[in-house]
Image (cartoon, rainbow, N blue to C red; front, side, top):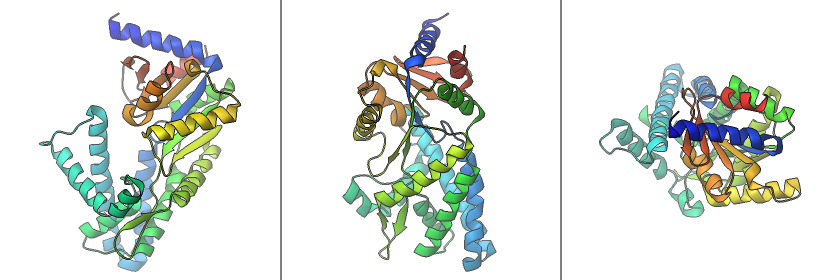
Length: 312
């Protein structure tokens, strides 16, 4: 057994030891639920909403371009997430940077007011899809289409089979589970061509969507949404820490904390490095081996590996 394998087994043992007193913090999208599959299915519904106003052919073209824009955005995001940089000569990197510039163009006022943009705002992505098809969508058409899209995401979203089993194991031991998730970036197109952001509305809309997942097995004690401050901003995780301490009636012991997510930079880096002694689990779906990503971060390709430790 090499050094990396030894460290991985040590981390697995630590997780099993901590479990009876553990407090869990989990990212949602692509960590516990299959958001990408839900997105693919919900995107088909955009054409249904747009067809009466712009015709079947145009509606289908915009829907396809919306899917393509999202694909480019996710490909660039994942490439950056994996390496923390993008090769300037890489096609994906070039497409991603060009797309980011277009997204930022529509959110200049938002950045000035809030200090950041909502990169994955579906309202902005749909607007860009219309542009690419030489069709200018009205604010009403954008709002109606994306409202319907998110309703369908909630309908289609399901827990991964292995994450459902992990959640069952956590619930069976009556361990507290707190979820944290990025903003959906629900924006409104103004008459001047800029998008505006109401963090309270955006928060309420995502809260309602996630609450619907309780009926599908996603049970949790608390939920934190990145409106207006989003992960990986340290203030977001500081807010979580203070809120959970109040909820539990005491400051929790950091050595009992387990944080899970599909992005080290967005989900794990800040809490694991700030909440010293805490443990992190990085979920890379389909990864075959289990290994130590960092000193206190385990990387796994399925939740069954972790769940098996907890029910022995």
